[in-house]
Amino acid sequence: MPLKDSLALLLVIAVFGCTNNTSPKPVPPPVDSSQASAASAAEKPASAQAPATGNARPPGPKPTKLKVPEWFQEVQNLYEEATRAMDRGDDAKARESLDLLLAIQPGHENASIARARICRKQKDHEEALSVLETALKAQPGSLSLLYEKAVTQFEQGESAAALKTLEIMLKPENRMPPGRYLRAVILASLKDRDGALSALEDALENGFDDARRLETETRFSFLGEEERFQRVVRRLGTRANSASQASGEHKKDALELKLLHEANESFKLGELLSRLEQSLASHQGRPLTIDLKAVDGQPMKLSSYQGKPVLVVFWGSWSGWCRKQISEAARLRDAFQPSGLVVLSLYYELMGEKEAVEESVRAYLRDNKIDLPCAVIDDELANANEVATYPTTLFVGSDGKAYLKTSGYLDYTALEALTKALLKGQPQPSPPSAASPGEKRGQ
Image: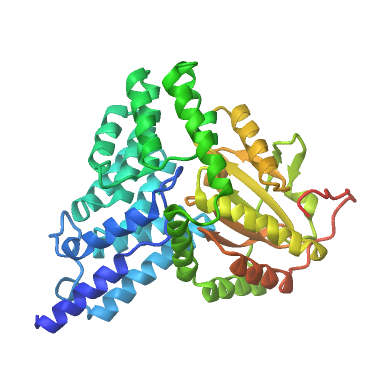
């Protein structure tokens, strides 16, 4: 192959492999996207040349008999097919598309994580680990893949293996607050007092700042009044207060704004609008049922809002993107209240007793002056709606059907544009069989 063509091929592979916040992320908490993207991008050129294993074939014109642009388009199309299938809840189709994609590009990070999550949802942790191991052979330095592997091992009950995986990724140059906090949780689950305390202190020193997450984690309850533990709690409280008073003067704030800008740029708003408009025009919505008890004790039933457009936001305060999303959703509800828009928020927490989580959520909503109906959900409801990334937003028509699902953070401009399209293309709901008073909360 001429040198010019070889360089062009490597450039396409490297560019396509980059990650952004619309891709599936470890749940919960999400990986530090700035470090994960940097590590992934650094590994792409080398991994693209790695020999294929098993029946997988490496990317490139010779094995696939495709020109570079055709190969690139094939991979992109397969990933889009898988994404649409996951939006519909069609795991079988998503799995088929992802398998074809991974046969062309075995080390594709996003596809590997999505494929592993399907396996985890089906409680097939061995298969999930196999998929991740294959991807890690191509990208041994991927923080996203390593974190996903550690979470899978912990879910499987292999705490020792999860700790070894975290040891690989938690190098001095990789701060990775979520990973360091996960290590503390695992050690706490093993009742390793000194180890859990040391890991908590290490997580704090490397940027962990979610005080409420620590408060709701029951695995730390055995530490009780341990002075070192109380010192961590006090420091987190002080840090949270300082952060709320900051005005962008810290480097962390600057980095967060930079990441937010990059995420906004990566969203294909035009494509989302087109998908929503087509779904509304063809009446291809997915029936949705929500029948829960909100954290304030009130019922949360989607059927109570028949005839109104609804946004359903899956989120968690452990994610910075989620905290931004729920604030933007509350602002959007206020702006579109005259149009009848309803916003429901569904809070997901992997660890912690439900009662403690609900108390934490009530405190968060109260402290941040967010007046939205909110219910705590479990894996069953999240899996039923194919929620693999947080935040996730469903755009529901007045007939109670979901016409669009977006994964990842949407800024206010995108939310506003999509909401306007939802209002404009409202399907006509079926007449209710019996009159029932609608609930005012969320309007």
